[in-house]
Length: 397
Length: 138
Image 1 (cartoon, rainbow over the protein chains, first blue to last red):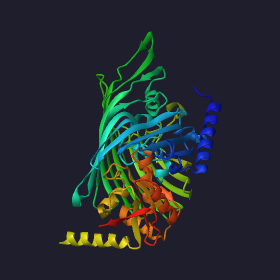
Image 2 (image 1 turned 180 degrees about the vertical axis):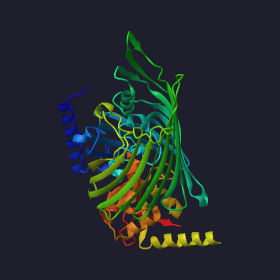
Image 3 (image 1 turned 120 degrees about the horizontal axis):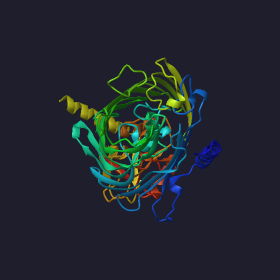
Image 4 (image 1 turned 45 degrees about the vertical axis):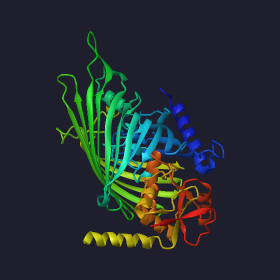
């Protein structure tokens, strides 16, 4: 377990290094790493530091006392070595609640070949497409809000949802007067971490005598379709994914010995999205279904649902404001159980001080505790409303 | 009939938006003309390579609210400057493409296009086009 001093030093190092790089305003065109006749390498990066405070409960960290455990940083590079070919990679580190812990991960590393506008392939470690934000959920500059609706885009679950090792094919099919259809279909392996959100949720579900021993890599298949309508800025999406076998090993101590339950589960996801950019407005809505089908006899299937609707308005090049309302139901068979739902109304203000520095402040009023995933830190939970303030700053280039 | 009028008006609107600006490309680009639809496909990332396989390198001017190039970019892409920036940030940080280069003024933008293979940009019609090729918009 990393010490607080180690984590603080790492946090400061990440912020300082990337802020220095951002301050230097690296320009991709200047980086002719392969000589003056070689392809230029395009670099981009970001570092974000957030702060959370909640009136009740500890959510995404020790938020009831104020928590700075909300850091994300990434650095990517991309270049075109050959016609129709692109190579790109991104390194990423994060620390949110007890997930991430500043482990340096290869976020994506891929080779892409585009045959034409209708068909291309990518292989390697790719970002998984699902909905509006899954493949960019940790990129603060690309949205209005500090926290996306957590029932869909849980900041702790990125190791499970965001990337996979495999490949996809993609393209856009013109539909004449009906707009166009963009598609991505993927397959590969996900590699959940013992420091990730899935691990946190599993540990949270175990009895005190239980221990999470390991989480297996798992195959995942799925796809994302976007109908880009003839109306500029309006699109609708549908995504689906399946993990045929998600398995983790646990040991539970019982009187006289221990047991190792069968945890093999099939997981299925569906997500439906709508997005409309109209003048200075951005309207978004999504609906997400997550279904687990345990293999073990006597284990009940689990069905969860999340939906949200949001609107944001950009006043000028400095200020943007937005709000959303979201509902998460961890078990749709118990919609009135506040331990299993979380309903959140959020208002946010974003300030773009410069092209490379933004600042956000956001307030949430929440009812329910379905997403806390921290039973030891939240021994008493009820259905009373509670508040969460989130503040975040990001440097990017 | 109604659809025909809508499409005609859309075409008139797009032609009007390109008043006062021209599309320039690096001389390595082999095409000499482009349709409005194909131009939009470039600026919204659906077309990322020229017919000869060379990558499309989009360059835009830094935000200038009253500039004709901003208006033209908005009409071509269907997005205002803020949405355009966010749109491309999503693409680059998800590993799906490269962000347009942002250049401070018209002479520098022309110089950038002249020195970068595959580059394309929208510039004021009175810009000095030394070293670049003008793309006819059909």
